[in-house]
Length: 176
Image (cartoon, helix red, strand yellow):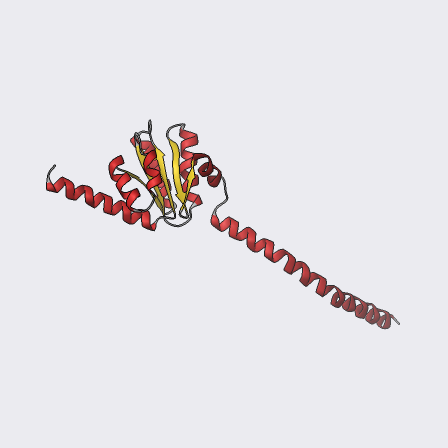
């Protein structure tokens, strides 16, 4: 093997390691049977979610994953392998990939890492069904806001009754 080939491979491994270090979600997926057109469409959808799909040789992916501290993933590197790397929301890119696999009926999710924890295929599909981070935060804020607004209504009740009583007295005196 030439020095140039070794340098290129080490550069690919270094690039993958850097991407893995930045990623909030990392999924090892199978893309067997997918056409270039389908993969291009998938990559376009993933780019919109600030994520990417990387395809490289299993040995290079294995080296990058092992050096990044996820050596338990190397057992899943058989056959055509793609890496999904999401850099912001962990659920959105996973949802895009799971939807693609389901609709295209090609490829599969093998194993993944979400927020530094390793998950198997079934767990990844369950995580993909979760709402996005912004929706979950909105639900939390709504849940916190509901008791507060109810409390404000309770506090306004006596003041409202006083205003109605004063209006009734005013109407009664104005009517005489």
